[in-house]
Image 1 (cartoon, rainbow, N blue to C red):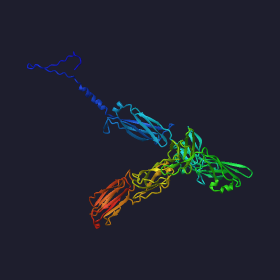
Image 2: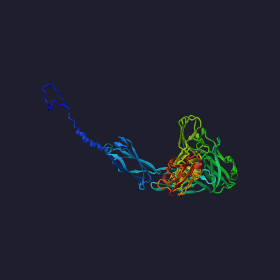
Image 3: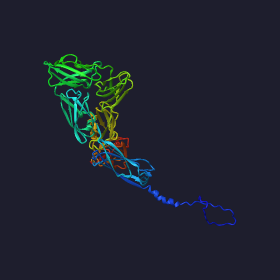
Image 4: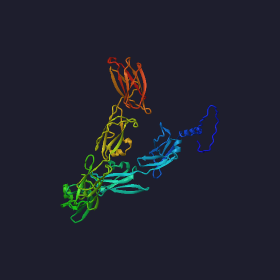
Length: 628
Protein backbone atom coordinates (compact mmCIF):
# COMPACT_ATOMS: atom_id res chain seq x y z
CA UNK A 1 0.00 0.00 0.00
CA UNK A 2 1.21 3.52 -0.76
CA UNK A 3 2.92 5.42 2.05
CA UNK A 4 0.92 8.52 1.06
CA UNK A 5 -1.96 8.75 3.60
CA UNK A 6 -3.99 10.93 1.23
CA UNK A 7 -3.96 8.44 -1.60
CA UNK A 8 -7.33 7.73 -3.14
CA UNK A 9 -8.52 4.47 -4.59
CA UNK A 10 -11.76 3.83 -6.42
CA UNK A 11 -13.43 0.64 -7.44
CA UNK A 12 -17.07 -0.25 -8.25
CA UNK A 13 -18.92 -3.07 -6.50
CA UNK A 14 -22.46 -4.34 -6.12
CA UNK A 15 -24.42 -3.20 -2.98
CA UNK A 16 -26.42 -5.84 -1.15
CA UNK A 17 -29.21 -4.67 1.22
CA UNK A 18 -28.85 -7.71 3.43
CA UNK A 19 -25.14 -7.22 4.05
CA UNK A 20 -23.86 -4.50 6.38
CA UNK A 21 -20.13 -5.32 6.49
CA UNK A 22 -17.77 -5.20 3.59
CA UNK A 23 -14.03 -6.04 3.41
CA UNK A 24 -11.80 -4.21 0.98
CA UNK A 25 -8.35 -5.64 0.00
CA UNK A 26 -6.01 -3.34 -1.83
CA UNK A 27 -3.20 -5.09 -3.75
CA UNK A 28 -0.32 -3.41 -5.52
CA UNK A 29 -0.34 -3.95 -9.26
CA UNK A 30 2.59 -6.12 -10.47
CA UNK A 31 3.82 -5.74 -14.01
CA UNK A 32 4.62 -9.36 -14.93
CA UNK A 33 4.94 -8.47 -18.55
CA UNK A 34 8.30 -6.81 -17.81
CA UNK A 35 9.73 -10.19 -16.83
CA UNK A 36 8.46 -11.64 -20.07
CA UNK A 37 10.39 -8.97 -21.91
CA UNK A 38 13.60 -9.97 -20.04
CA UNK A 39 13.39 -13.64 -21.00
CA UNK A 40 14.80 -13.12 -24.53
CA UNK A 41 17.62 -11.07 -23.00
CA UNK A 42 18.46 -13.91 -20.60
CA UNK A 43 18.47 -16.29 -23.53
CA UNK A 44 21.15 -14.20 -25.19
CA UNK A 45 23.53 -15.13 -22.35
CA UNK A 46 23.41 -18.74 -23.50
CA UNK A 47 24.49 -17.95 -27.04
CA UNK A 48 27.83 -19.57 -27.86
CA UNK A 49 30.63 -17.94 -29.83
CA UNK A 50 34.14 -18.83 -30.90
CA UNK A 51 37.39 -16.94 -30.53
CA UNK A 52 40.70 -17.30 -32.42
CA UNK A 53 44.17 -16.44 -31.13
CA UNK A 54 47.39 -16.64 -33.15
CA UNK A 55 50.67 -17.06 -31.23
CA UNK A 56 53.96 -15.97 -32.83
CA UNK A 57 57.07 -17.45 -31.17
CA UNK A 58 60.41 -15.74 -31.88
CA UNK A 59 63.90 -15.79 -30.41
CA UNK A 60 65.74 -12.83 -28.89
CA UNK A 61 66.75 -11.63 -32.37
CA UNK A 62 63.18 -11.80 -33.71
CA UNK A 63 63.68 -14.96 -35.78
CA UNK A 64 60.77 -17.46 -35.82
CA UNK A 65 61.10 -20.50 -33.55
CA UNK A 66 59.78 -23.62 -35.28
CA UNK A 67 58.68 -26.84 -33.54
CA UNK A 68 57.94 -25.01 -30.27
CA UNK A 69 55.30 -26.56 -28.05
CA UNK A 70 52.71 -23.85 -27.32
CA UNK A 71 50.05 -24.31 -24.66
CA UNK A 72 47.07 -22.01 -24.09
CA UNK A 73 44.82 -22.30 -21.03
CA UNK A 74 41.67 -20.33 -20.21
CA UNK A 75 38.27 -20.63 -18.52
CA UNK A 76 35.34 -20.41 -20.99
CA UNK A 77 32.81 -19.10 -18.39
CA UNK A 78 29.88 -20.53 -20.33
CA UNK A 79 26.58 -20.85 -18.47
CA UNK A 80 26.11 -24.47 -19.57
CA UNK A 81 29.29 -26.23 -20.64
CA UNK A 82 30.08 -29.94 -20.86
CA UNK A 83 26.94 -30.83 -18.95
CA UNK A 84 27.69 -28.41 -16.11
CA UNK A 85 25.99 -25.14 -15.17
CA UNK A 86 28.22 -22.15 -14.33
CA UNK A 87 31.29 -24.35 -14.66
CA UNK A 88 34.71 -22.93 -13.80
CA UNK A 89 36.60 -25.77 -15.46
CA UNK A 90 39.60 -24.54 -17.45
CA UNK A 91 40.44 -25.59 -21.00
CA UNK A 92 44.01 -26.41 -21.99
CA UNK A 93 44.96 -26.51 -25.68
CA UNK A 94 48.26 -27.38 -27.33
CA UNK A 95 49.78 -26.63 -30.72
CA UNK A 96 53.22 -26.86 -32.37
CA UNK A 97 54.61 -23.86 -34.23
CA UNK A 98 55.20 -24.15 -37.97
CA UNK A 99 58.32 -23.03 -39.83
CA UNK A 100 57.19 -19.41 -39.44
CA UNK A 101 56.96 -19.84 -35.67
CA UNK A 102 53.16 -19.59 -35.74
CA UNK A 103 50.65 -21.61 -33.71
CA UNK A 104 46.95 -21.00 -34.33
CA UNK A 105 44.21 -21.68 -31.80
CA UNK A 106 40.93 -21.58 -33.70
CA UNK A 107 37.34 -21.99 -32.62
CA UNK A 108 37.88 -21.68 -28.88
CA UNK A 109 34.43 -21.74 -27.23
CA UNK A 110 33.14 -18.66 -25.40
CA UNK A 111 29.71 -17.00 -24.94
CA UNK A 112 27.85 -13.71 -24.67
CA UNK A 113 27.77 -14.34 -20.91
CA UNK A 114 31.59 -14.48 -20.74
CA UNK A 115 31.95 -11.34 -22.88
CA UNK A 116 29.65 -9.39 -20.54
CA UNK A 117 30.63 -10.65 -17.10
CA UNK A 118 34.19 -11.96 -17.65
CA UNK A 119 35.43 -9.65 -20.38
CA UNK A 120 38.67 -8.98 -18.48
CA UNK A 121 39.54 -12.62 -17.81
CA UNK A 122 43.02 -13.75 -18.87
CA UNK A 123 44.44 -16.74 -20.69
CA UNK A 124 47.83 -18.26 -19.93
CA UNK A 125 50.11 -18.87 -22.91
CA UNK A 126 53.41 -20.74 -22.66
CA UNK A 127 56.02 -22.00 -25.11
CA UNK A 128 58.67 -24.65 -24.58
CA UNK A 129 61.38 -26.16 -26.73
CA UNK A 130 64.56 -28.10 -26.12
CA UNK A 131 66.74 -25.22 -27.26
CA UNK A 132 65.03 -22.24 -25.63
CA UNK A 133 64.12 -21.22 -22.11
CA UNK A 134 60.46 -21.74 -21.29
CA UNK A 135 58.31 -18.63 -21.73
CA UNK A 136 54.94 -17.98 -20.05
CA UNK A 137 52.69 -14.91 -20.24
CA UNK A 138 49.13 -13.85 -19.40
CA UNK A 139 46.90 -11.99 -21.88
CA UNK A 140 43.28 -10.89 -22.03
CA UNK A 141 41.36 -13.72 -23.64
CA UNK A 142 38.35 -12.02 -25.27
CA UNK A 143 40.06 -9.03 -26.88
CA UNK A 144 43.41 -10.56 -27.88
CA UNK A 145 43.92 -11.91 -31.38
CA UNK A 146 47.72 -12.01 -31.74
CA UNK A 147 50.37 -12.81 -29.13
CA UNK A 148 54.14 -12.67 -29.56
CA UNK A 149 56.25 -14.79 -27.23
CA UNK A 150 59.93 -13.90 -27.25
CA UNK A 151 62.13 -16.77 -26.07
CA UNK A 152 65.78 -16.67 -25.03
CA UNK A 153 68.28 -19.32 -25.93
CA UNK A 154 68.66 -21.94 -23.22
CA UNK A 155 72.24 -22.15 -22.04
CA UNK A 156 73.97 -24.93 -20.20
CA UNK A 157 77.39 -26.21 -19.21
CA UNK A 158 79.39 -28.39 -21.61
CA UNK A 159 81.94 -30.97 -20.47
CA UNK A 160 85.19 -32.17 -22.03
CA UNK A 161 87.58 -34.82 -20.75
CA UNK A 162 91.30 -34.67 -21.62
CA UNK A 163 93.35 -37.88 -21.30
CA UNK A 164 96.86 -39.08 -22.13
CA UNK A 165 96.69 -41.13 -25.33
CA UNK A 166 99.28 -43.65 -24.15
CA UNK A 167 98.36 -44.11 -20.47
CA UNK A 168 94.70 -42.98 -20.41
CA UNK A 169 95.59 -40.87 -17.35
CA UNK A 170 93.66 -37.61 -16.83
CA UNK A 171 95.72 -34.55 -17.73
CA UNK A 172 95.49 -31.72 -15.21
CA UNK A 173 95.88 -28.06 -16.21
CA UNK A 174 95.45 -28.72 -19.94
CA UNK A 175 93.90 -25.94 -22.03
CA UNK A 176 90.65 -26.46 -23.93
CA UNK A 177 90.13 -23.70 -26.52
CA UNK A 178 86.88 -23.00 -28.36
CA UNK A 179 84.92 -20.27 -30.08
CA UNK A 180 81.78 -18.66 -28.67
CA UNK A 181 79.49 -15.92 -29.95
CA UNK A 182 78.70 -13.02 -27.59
CA UNK A 183 76.31 -10.27 -28.72
CA UNK A 184 76.65 -11.45 -32.29
CA UNK A 185 80.46 -11.38 -32.23
CA UNK A 186 82.60 -14.51 -32.45
CA UNK A 187 85.20 -14.69 -29.70
CA UNK A 188 88.01 -17.08 -28.80
CA UNK A 189 87.79 -18.50 -25.31
CA UNK A 190 89.44 -21.23 -23.25
CA UNK A 191 89.16 -23.15 -19.99
CA UNK A 192 91.56 -25.28 -17.93
CA UNK A 193 91.11 -28.91 -16.93
CA UNK A 194 90.89 -29.86 -13.25
CA UNK A 195 92.92 -32.70 -11.66
CA UNK A 196 90.35 -35.18 -13.05
CA UNK A 197 91.13 -33.96 -16.60
CA UNK A 198 87.67 -32.43 -16.88
CA UNK A 199 87.04 -29.00 -18.41
CA UNK A 200 83.72 -27.17 -18.05
CA UNK A 201 82.53 -24.68 -20.66
CA UNK A 202 79.90 -22.59 -18.91
CA UNK A 203 76.75 -20.98 -20.33
CA UNK A 204 76.98 -22.26 -23.89
CA UNK A 205 73.83 -22.31 -26.11
CA UNK A 206 72.23 -25.67 -25.40
CA UNK A 207 71.57 -26.46 -29.07
CA UNK A 208 74.56 -24.64 -30.54
CA UNK A 209 77.50 -26.05 -32.48
CA UNK A 210 81.06 -25.97 -31.17
CA UNK A 211 82.80 -25.43 -34.49
CA UNK A 212 86.35 -25.86 -33.19
CA UNK A 213 87.42 -27.53 -29.94
CA UNK A 214 91.15 -27.78 -29.34
CA UNK A 215 92.96 -29.53 -26.48
CA UNK A 216 96.55 -28.58 -25.72
CA UNK A 217 99.16 -29.08 -23.00
CA UNK A 218 102.91 -28.63 -22.91
CA UNK A 219 104.61 -31.84 -23.96
CA UNK A 220 101.65 -33.04 -26.06
CA UNK A 221 100.51 -32.59 -29.63
CA UNK A 222 97.33 -30.55 -29.95
CA UNK A 223 94.11 -32.45 -30.66
CA UNK A 224 91.23 -30.78 -32.48
CA UNK A 225 87.57 -31.73 -32.81
CA UNK A 226 85.22 -29.89 -35.16
CA UNK A 227 81.48 -29.27 -35.48
CA UNK A 228 80.42 -30.83 -32.20
CA UNK A 229 76.71 -30.43 -31.38
CA UNK A 230 76.41 -28.91 -27.91
CA UNK A 231 73.71 -31.48 -27.11
CA UNK A 232 76.39 -34.18 -27.25
CA UNK A 233 78.49 -32.30 -24.70
CA UNK A 234 75.98 -32.03 -21.85
CA UNK A 235 77.93 -34.86 -20.23
CA UNK A 236 81.32 -36.46 -20.79
CA UNK A 237 81.17 -39.15 -23.47
CA UNK A 238 83.46 -40.80 -26.00
CA UNK A 239 82.70 -38.05 -28.51
CA UNK A 240 83.80 -35.33 -26.06
CA UNK A 241 86.94 -37.05 -24.80
CA UNK A 242 90.21 -35.70 -26.19
CA UNK A 243 93.29 -37.90 -26.06
CA UNK A 244 96.58 -36.04 -26.40
CA UNK A 245 99.70 -37.69 -27.80
CA UNK A 246 102.99 -37.06 -25.91
CA UNK A 247 105.69 -35.61 -28.17
CA UNK A 248 108.49 -34.88 -25.69
CA UNK A 249 110.54 -36.90 -23.29
CA UNK A 250 108.88 -37.04 -19.89
CA UNK A 251 109.72 -37.82 -16.29
CA UNK A 252 106.80 -39.14 -14.23
CA UNK A 253 106.55 -38.70 -10.45
CA UNK A 254 103.98 -38.62 -7.63
CA UNK A 255 103.01 -36.28 -4.78
CA UNK A 256 101.45 -37.91 -1.70
CA UNK A 257 100.59 -37.31 1.96
CA UNK A 258 103.41 -38.65 4.12
CA UNK A 259 101.06 -39.67 6.96
CA UNK A 260 98.12 -41.23 5.09
CA UNK A 261 99.98 -42.16 1.85
CA UNK A 262 97.03 -40.67 -0.05
CA UNK A 263 97.62 -39.07 -3.49
CA UNK A 264 97.47 -35.27 -3.50
CA UNK A 265 95.67 -33.79 -6.55
CA UNK A 266 96.34 -30.24 -7.71
CA UNK A 267 99.86 -30.03 -6.24
CA UNK A 268 102.21 -27.64 -8.07
CA UNK A 269 105.60 -29.16 -8.88
CA UNK A 270 108.78 -28.07 -10.62
CA UNK A 271 111.11 -30.67 -12.13
CA UNK A 272 114.68 -29.48 -12.59
CA UNK A 273 117.38 -31.27 -14.60
CA UNK A 274 121.01 -30.25 -14.05
CA UNK A 275 123.70 -31.59 -16.38
CA UNK A 276 127.42 -32.04 -15.69
CA UNK A 277 128.09 -28.47 -16.78
CA UNK A 278 125.58 -27.11 -14.22
CA UNK A 279 123.17 -26.18 -16.99
CA UNK A 280 119.57 -26.46 -15.76
CA UNK A 281 116.21 -26.86 -17.46
CA UNK A 282 112.86 -26.75 -15.66
CA UNK A 283 109.36 -28.04 -16.30
CA UNK A 284 106.22 -27.16 -14.33
CA UNK A 285 103.48 -29.66 -13.64
CA UNK A 286 100.16 -30.04 -11.80
CA UNK A 287 99.27 -33.42 -10.32
CA UNK A 288 96.07 -35.26 -11.28
CA UNK A 289 93.65 -37.22 -9.06
CA UNK A 290 96.27 -39.99 -8.77
CA UNK A 291 98.82 -37.49 -7.43
CA UNK A 292 100.70 -38.06 -10.68
CA UNK A 293 102.78 -35.32 -12.32
CA UNK A 294 105.00 -35.14 -15.39
CA UNK A 295 108.00 -33.09 -16.41
CA UNK A 296 108.48 -32.68 -20.18
CA UNK A 297 111.81 -31.88 -21.77
CA UNK A 298 113.18 -31.46 -25.26
CA UNK A 299 116.07 -33.73 -24.37
CA UNK A 300 116.43 -35.40 -20.97
CA UNK A 301 120.09 -36.45 -20.73
CA UNK A 302 120.31 -39.74 -18.87
CA UNK A 303 123.20 -38.47 -16.72
CA UNK A 304 121.49 -35.22 -15.72
CA UNK A 305 120.60 -34.84 -12.04
CA UNK A 306 116.86 -34.83 -11.13
CA UNK A 307 115.33 -32.54 -8.52
CA UNK A 308 111.60 -32.15 -7.82
CA UNK A 309 109.96 -29.52 -5.62
CA UNK A 310 106.25 -29.79 -4.71
CA UNK A 311 103.77 -27.51 -2.98
CA UNK A 312 100.08 -27.74 -2.02
CA UNK A 313 98.83 -24.74 -0.06
CA UNK A 314 97.24 -24.25 2.42
CA UNK A 315 97.12 -27.78 3.79
CA UNK A 316 100.69 -29.07 3.30
CA UNK A 317 104.27 -27.98 3.89
CA UNK A 318 106.48 -27.71 0.82
CA UNK A 319 108.92 -30.54 0.22
CA UNK A 320 111.43 -31.92 -2.26
CA UNK A 321 112.32 -35.32 -3.65
CA UNK A 322 114.23 -37.48 -1.19
CA UNK A 323 117.35 -39.01 -2.66
CA UNK A 324 119.70 -38.04 -5.45
CA UNK A 325 119.20 -39.62 -8.89
CA UNK A 326 120.28 -39.19 -12.44
CA UNK A 327 117.55 -39.35 -15.07
CA UNK A 328 118.48 -42.91 -15.93
CA UNK A 329 118.40 -43.95 -12.26
CA UNK A 330 115.16 -42.10 -11.52
CA UNK A 331 113.22 -43.77 -14.33
CA UNK A 332 114.10 -47.19 -12.92
CA UNK A 333 112.97 -46.43 -9.37
CA UNK A 334 109.73 -47.82 -7.84
CA UNK A 335 106.82 -45.42 -7.37
CA UNK A 336 107.62 -44.66 -3.70
CA UNK A 337 111.14 -43.51 -4.59
CA UNK A 338 109.70 -41.26 -7.32
CA UNK A 339 107.31 -39.66 -4.83
CA UNK A 340 107.55 -36.27 -3.15
CA UNK A 341 106.07 -36.72 0.32
CA UNK A 342 104.29 -33.70 1.79
CA UNK A 343 103.65 -33.30 5.49
CA UNK A 344 100.19 -31.92 6.38
CA UNK A 345 99.80 -28.76 8.44
CA UNK A 346 98.53 -29.12 12.04
CA UNK A 347 94.78 -29.87 12.34
CA UNK A 348 94.50 -31.19 8.77
CA UNK A 349 92.17 -34.16 8.53
CA UNK A 350 90.71 -36.00 5.52
CA UNK A 351 87.07 -36.15 4.46
CA UNK A 352 85.73 -38.51 1.80
CA UNK A 353 83.32 -38.07 -1.13
CA UNK A 354 81.19 -41.17 -1.69
CA UNK A 355 78.21 -42.26 -3.79
CA UNK A 356 75.05 -42.12 -1.63
CA UNK A 357 73.67 -45.33 -3.19
CA UNK A 358 76.69 -47.59 -3.65
CA UNK A 359 79.01 -46.09 -1.02
CA UNK A 360 81.86 -46.10 -3.54
CA UNK A 361 84.53 -43.41 -3.37
CA UNK A 362 84.20 -40.55 -5.86
CA UNK A 363 87.24 -39.05 -7.54
CA UNK A 364 87.38 -35.57 -9.03
CA UNK A 365 84.76 -33.92 -6.79
CA UNK A 366 85.28 -30.18 -6.39
CA UNK A 367 84.86 -29.23 -2.72
CA UNK A 368 84.57 -25.53 -1.79
CA UNK A 369 85.34 -25.42 1.92
CA UNK A 370 84.66 -22.67 4.47
CA UNK A 371 85.90 -23.19 8.04
CA UNK A 372 85.01 -20.89 10.92
CA UNK A 373 87.34 -21.59 13.84
CA UNK A 374 86.17 -21.35 17.49
CA UNK A 375 87.98 -17.99 17.78
CA UNK A 376 85.99 -16.60 14.83
CA UNK A 377 88.72 -16.76 12.18
CA UNK A 378 87.46 -17.82 8.75
CA UNK A 379 89.51 -19.50 6.04
CA UNK A 380 88.45 -20.93 2.68
CA UNK A 381 89.92 -23.40 0.22
CA UNK A 382 88.98 -25.50 -2.81
CA UNK A 383 90.05 -29.14 -2.86
CA UNK A 384 89.54 -31.91 -5.41
CA UNK A 385 89.00 -35.44 -4.12
CA UNK A 386 91.69 -37.92 -5.13
CA UNK A 387 91.27 -41.33 -6.74
CA UNK A 388 90.14 -42.71 -3.37
CA UNK A 389 87.63 -39.91 -2.79
CA UNK A 390 89.76 -38.26 -0.09
CA UNK A 391 90.30 -34.50 0.33
CA UNK A 392 91.90 -32.43 3.14
CA UNK A 393 90.14 -30.08 5.55
CA UNK A 394 91.96 -27.94 8.12
CA UNK A 395 89.80 -27.46 11.21
CA UNK A 396 90.11 -27.46 14.97
CA UNK A 397 87.67 -29.30 17.20
CA UNK A 398 84.46 -27.32 17.60
CA UNK A 399 84.93 -25.40 14.32
CA UNK A 400 82.03 -24.81 11.95
CA UNK A 401 82.57 -26.41 8.53
CA UNK A 402 80.60 -25.65 5.39
CA UNK A 403 81.33 -27.68 2.24
CA UNK A 404 79.83 -27.22 -1.24
CA UNK A 405 80.57 -30.36 -3.28
CA UNK A 406 80.15 -30.62 -7.07
CA UNK A 407 80.65 -33.40 -9.57
CA UNK A 408 78.53 -32.25 -12.48
CA UNK A 409 76.69 -33.53 -14.40
CA UNK A 410 76.94 -37.03 -12.88
CA UNK A 411 75.89 -36.00 -9.37
CA UNK A 412 73.64 -33.43 -7.75
CA UNK A 413 75.36 -30.66 -5.84
CA UNK A 414 75.71 -31.44 -2.15
CA UNK A 415 75.87 -28.99 0.77
CA UNK A 416 77.37 -30.23 4.02
CA UNK A 417 77.19 -28.15 7.18
CA UNK A 418 78.88 -29.23 10.40
CA UNK A 419 77.92 -27.02 13.35
CA UNK A 420 80.69 -28.31 15.60
CA UNK A 421 83.50 -30.42 14.12
CA UNK A 422 84.64 -33.48 16.07
CA UNK A 423 85.67 -36.12 13.50
CA UNK A 424 86.06 -36.58 9.72
CA UNK A 425 82.91 -37.36 7.77
CA UNK A 426 81.83 -38.89 4.49
CA UNK A 427 80.16 -36.50 2.08
CA UNK A 428 77.45 -38.60 0.45
CA UNK A 429 76.52 -37.40 -3.02
CA UNK A 430 73.31 -38.35 -4.81
CA UNK A 431 73.62 -39.43 -8.46
CA UNK A 432 71.77 -37.26 -10.99
CA UNK A 433 69.76 -40.12 -12.50
CA UNK A 434 68.30 -39.81 -15.98
CA UNK A 435 65.36 -41.42 -17.76
CA UNK A 436 65.49 -42.49 -21.41
CA UNK A 437 62.50 -43.20 -23.65
CA UNK A 438 62.72 -46.11 -26.10
CA UNK A 439 60.29 -47.65 -28.59
CA UNK A 440 59.86 -51.11 -30.06
CA UNK A 441 58.90 -50.50 -33.69
CA UNK A 442 58.04 -52.56 -36.76
CA UNK A 443 61.23 -53.14 -38.76
CA UNK A 444 59.39 -52.63 -42.06
CA UNK A 445 57.27 -49.71 -40.83
CA UNK A 446 59.28 -47.75 -38.20
CA UNK A 447 56.34 -45.46 -37.45
CA UNK A 448 54.30 -48.45 -36.19
CA UNK A 449 54.85 -49.52 -32.59
CA UNK A 450 55.15 -53.18 -31.60
CA UNK A 451 53.52 -53.54 -28.17
CA UNK A 452 54.14 -55.93 -25.27
CA UNK A 453 57.71 -56.96 -26.07
CA UNK A 454 59.65 -58.69 -23.31
CA UNK A 455 62.69 -56.70 -22.24
CA UNK A 456 65.98 -57.37 -20.49
CA UNK A 457 67.69 -54.07 -19.65
CA UNK A 458 71.12 -53.85 -18.03
CA UNK A 459 73.29 -50.85 -17.16
CA UNK A 460 76.99 -51.10 -16.45
CA UNK A 461 76.55 -49.02 -13.28
CA UNK A 462 72.85 -49.23 -12.43
CA UNK A 463 72.58 -53.00 -13.01
CA UNK A 464 69.43 -54.80 -14.13
CA UNK A 465 66.50 -52.45 -14.67
CA UNK A 466 63.02 -53.17 -13.37
CA UNK A 467 61.34 -52.41 -16.72
CA UNK A 468 60.51 -55.77 -18.35
CA UNK A 469 57.88 -54.88 -20.99
CA UNK A 470 57.59 -52.34 -23.76
CA UNK A 471 53.92 -51.80 -22.87
CA UNK A 472 52.11 -50.09 -25.76
CA UNK A 473 55.42 -49.98 -27.68
CA UNK A 474 56.83 -46.87 -26.02
CA UNK A 475 58.57 -47.27 -22.67
CA UNK A 476 60.80 -45.29 -20.31
CA UNK A 477 63.88 -46.61 -18.55
CA UNK A 478 64.47 -44.72 -15.28
CA UNK A 479 67.38 -44.74 -12.86
CA UNK A 480 70.20 -44.57 -15.40
CA UNK A 481 73.49 -42.87 -14.57
CA UNK A 482 75.57 -40.44 -16.54
CA UNK A 483 78.68 -42.13 -17.87
CA UNK A 484 77.30 -45.67 -17.90
CA UNK A 485 76.42 -47.94 -20.81
CA UNK A 486 73.13 -49.71 -21.41
CA UNK A 487 72.11 -52.89 -23.24
CA UNK A 488 68.55 -53.89 -24.16
CA UNK A 489 67.29 -57.24 -25.43
CA UNK A 490 63.76 -57.12 -26.87
CA UNK A 491 61.85 -60.29 -27.72
CA UNK A 492 58.31 -61.25 -28.63
CA UNK A 493 56.56 -64.32 -29.96
CA UNK A 494 56.40 -64.24 -33.78
CA UNK A 495 59.30 -61.70 -33.93
CA UNK A 496 63.08 -62.06 -34.15
CA UNK A 497 64.87 -61.11 -30.93
CA UNK A 498 66.76 -57.82 -31.17
CA UNK A 499 69.80 -57.55 -28.91
CA UNK A 500 72.02 -55.48 -31.21
CA UNK A 501 70.41 -52.04 -31.64
CA UNK A 502 71.00 -50.96 -28.02
CA UNK A 503 74.12 -52.88 -27.08
CA UNK A 504 76.68 -51.33 -24.71
CA UNK A 505 75.38 -47.92 -25.78
CA UNK A 506 76.53 -44.72 -24.05
CA UNK A 507 73.68 -43.31 -21.94
CA UNK A 508 74.74 -39.70 -22.43
CA UNK A 509 74.99 -40.17 -26.20
CA UNK A 510 71.48 -41.68 -26.23
CA UNK A 511 70.22 -38.81 -24.09
CA UNK A 512 71.37 -36.30 -26.72
CA UNK A 513 70.25 -38.41 -29.70
CA UNK A 514 66.99 -38.20 -31.64
CA UNK A 515 64.22 -40.71 -30.95
CA UNK A 516 65.04 -42.91 -33.97
CA UNK A 517 68.42 -43.68 -32.39
CA UNK A 518 66.51 -45.16 -29.43
CA UNK A 519 64.03 -47.14 -31.55
CA UNK A 520 64.40 -50.93 -31.44
CA UNK A 521 63.24 -52.52 -34.74
CA UNK A 522 61.33 -55.81 -34.43
CA UNK A 523 61.15 -58.09 -37.49
CA UNK A 524 58.30 -60.56 -37.97
CA UNK A 525 59.52 -64.14 -38.50
CA UNK A 526 56.16 -65.69 -39.56
CA UNK A 527 54.89 -67.18 -42.82
CA UNK A 528 53.07 -64.57 -44.91
CA UNK A 529 49.34 -64.41 -45.39
CA UNK A 530 48.71 -66.35 -48.65
CA UNK A 531 47.15 -65.17 -51.88
CA UNK A 532 44.45 -67.85 -51.82
CA UNK A 533 46.20 -71.18 -51.29
CA UNK A 534 45.11 -73.25 -48.28
CA UNK A 535 47.29 -72.46 -45.27
CA UNK A 536 46.23 -75.17 -42.83
CA UNK A 537 44.40 -78.50 -42.85
CA UNK A 538 43.21 -80.67 -40.01
CA UNK A 539 45.48 -83.70 -40.32
CA UNK A 540 43.12 -85.22 -37.75
CA UNK A 541 44.02 -82.47 -35.24
CA UNK A 542 41.51 -81.56 -32.56
CA UNK A 543 43.18 -78.17 -32.06
CA UNK A 544 45.49 -76.05 -34.20
CA UNK A 545 47.10 -72.64 -33.54
CA UNK A 546 49.10 -70.73 -36.18
CA UNK A 547 50.24 -67.10 -36.51
CA UNK A 548 50.70 -65.14 -39.75
CA UNK A 549 52.40 -62.01 -41.08
CA UNK A 550 49.65 -59.71 -42.38
CA UNK A 551 51.86 -58.06 -44.98
CA UNK A 552 50.93 -54.68 -46.45
CA UNK A 553 49.29 -52.07 -44.27
CA UNK A 554 46.52 -49.86 -45.63
CA UNK A 555 45.90 -46.65 -43.72
CA UNK A 556 46.13 -47.49 -40.03
CA UNK A 557 45.05 -51.15 -40.32
CA UNK A 558 45.58 -54.47 -42.08
CA UNK A 559 42.84 -56.29 -43.99
CA UNK A 560 42.40 -60.00 -44.64
CA UNK A 561 39.77 -62.52 -45.71
CA UNK A 562 39.36 -65.97 -44.16
CA UNK A 563 37.70 -68.83 -46.03
CA UNK A 564 36.77 -71.97 -44.09
CA UNK A 565 35.77 -75.36 -45.40
CA UNK A 566 34.57 -77.52 -42.55
CA UNK A 567 33.61 -80.59 -44.58
CA UNK A 568 30.29 -81.13 -42.80
CA UNK A 569 31.57 -80.99 -39.24
CA UNK A 570 32.11 -77.31 -38.59
CA UNK A 571 34.95 -76.50 -36.21
CA UNK A 572 35.12 -73.50 -33.89
CA UNK A 573 37.57 -70.97 -35.34
CA UNK A 574 38.98 -68.02 -33.40
CA UNK A 575 41.00 -65.03 -34.57
CA UNK A 576 43.54 -63.42 -32.23
CA UNK A 577 45.08 -60.06 -33.08
CA UNK A 578 48.03 -58.96 -30.97
CA UNK A 579 46.78 -55.40 -30.66
CA UNK A 580 44.05 -56.38 -28.19
CA UNK A 581 45.20 -59.82 -27.02
CA UNK A 582 41.67 -61.24 -27.29
CA UNK A 583 40.38 -64.13 -29.42
CA UNK A 584 37.29 -63.36 -31.53
CA UNK A 585 35.17 -66.44 -32.27
CA UNK A 586 33.92 -66.81 -35.85
CA UNK A 587 30.38 -68.22 -35.96
CA UNK A 588 30.54 -70.53 -39.01
CA UNK A 589 27.05 -70.91 -40.43
CA UNK A 590 27.71 -73.26 -43.32
CA UNK A 591 30.37 -75.46 -44.81
CA UNK A 592 31.89 -72.74 -46.98
CA UNK A 593 32.33 -69.68 -44.82
CA UNK A 594 33.96 -66.43 -46.03
CA UNK A 595 34.40 -63.24 -44.01
CA UNK A 596 36.67 -60.15 -44.18
CA UNK A 597 38.32 -58.45 -41.22
CA UNK A 598 40.60 -55.53 -40.39
CA UNK A 599 43.14 -55.40 -37.60
CA UNK A 600 45.68 -52.82 -36.47
CA UNK A 601 48.38 -55.35 -35.65
CA UNK A 602 50.58 -56.91 -38.39
CA UNK A 603 50.31 -60.35 -36.75
CA UNK A 604 47.17 -62.46 -36.31
CA UNK A 605 46.77 -65.92 -34.84
CA UNK A 606 44.18 -68.42 -36.05
CA UNK A 607 42.99 -71.02 -33.55
CA UNK A 608 40.87 -73.99 -34.68
CA UNK A 609 39.05 -76.29 -32.25
CA UNK A 610 37.20 -79.29 -33.66
CA UNK A 611 33.73 -79.78 -32.27
CA UNK A 612 34.09 -83.58 -32.16
CA UNK A 613 36.29 -85.47 -29.72
CA UNK A 614 37.15 -88.00 -32.44
CA UNK A 615 40.19 -87.01 -34.49
CA UNK A 616 38.79 -88.93 -37.47
CA UNK A 617 35.90 -86.46 -37.59
CA UNK A 618 38.28 -83.47 -37.74
CA UNK A 619 38.01 -82.43 -41.37
CA UNK A 620 38.62 -78.79 -42.19
CA UNK A 621 40.89 -76.33 -43.96
CA UNK A 622 41.13 -72.56 -44.15
CA UNK A 623 42.64 -69.94 -46.37
CA UNK A 624 43.78 -66.41 -45.43
CA UNK A 625 43.96 -63.84 -48.22
CA UNK A 626 45.76 -60.52 -47.73
CA UNK A 627 46.24 -57.72 -50.29
CA UNK A 628 50.03 -58.12 -50.44
